[in-house]
Amino acid sequence: MRLFAAVLPPEGVMAEVATAVRRLRRLPRAEELRWIQPGTWHFTLAFYGEVEDGLLPELRERLGRAARRHRPYEMRLCGAGRFTHRALWIGAEGDRRAMARLADTASAAGRRAGLPMGGHRAYTPHLTIARSRDRTRTDLRPFVDALAGFSGAPWLAGELTLVRSLLPVSGVEGEQPQYETLQSWPLNA
Image (cartoon, rainbow, N blue to C red; front, side):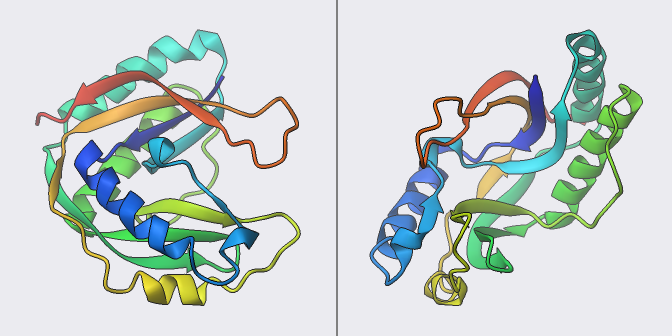
């Protein structure tokens, strides 16, 4: 099964983002983007890819231990950014170092459970809200500019969550992955 570790913002925070995204969707060329469904917004900490069933118990154990080594931390969604022309995201401020440490620990849990985690790269906390469609190279700068003043309410990140990604199989254009929470652990160092 295809898995990743994440931090899920609370519903109130998601509602603030949804309001901002509704305004963005009225901008010129917004129809060229594939907008991510609000119920699936998350901060990916570590992407594990396809995980064999036999490795799942070890991964769960290690993620539980990882969560016990971290304290809850305050975050706020604010501003925006882009990864070239491919992805539009809302950024975060607050204890970004705490989130980066949690991401490092979630990646280490995957490696220690026997998963090939690939190379290490610096963690950038972001919540992806839209992606370019395959054949378009939409200029995302106007969308980033429109979100420059966005600042949500502060919230406490208090859980590490293991999520299963169910990829679309229907072949319907625009269909998006569905996410299923497999388990969550409180941060309680």
